[in-house]
Length: 129
Image (cartoon, rainbow, N blue to C red; front, side):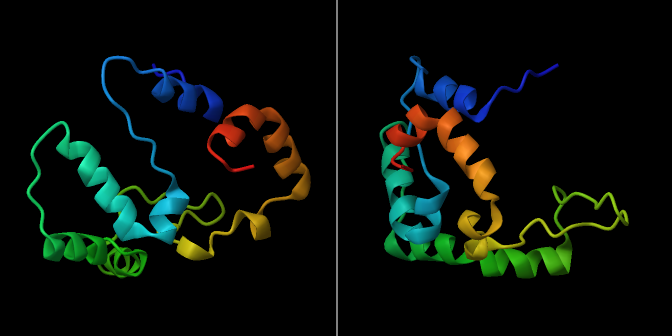
């Protein structure tokens, strides 16, 4: 069985890896500047393995993985990781909100305050607060 800890435990487990270099990629960066973040990831991987990519391949990769394209693909082909609703047992779209997933509009302020208190150190390290 797998033991799942808190978000903090998960973050620290990656942060404390000593046997391999790590790169922490924030979801927000992928959304705000997908291409720049993708190039950062490729440059990081290039230190470990040789990856030959040109500008055209980078642009094609970013475009083919756009949220809008993934939504369309899920509509046509489905998505195996989508879960079923407990209310009516119908599949819930996996690719749902995308850039509209603004936690400030969706998260109760009491829960936000609790998260900030619980994960204050990690959120400061990652420059969330």
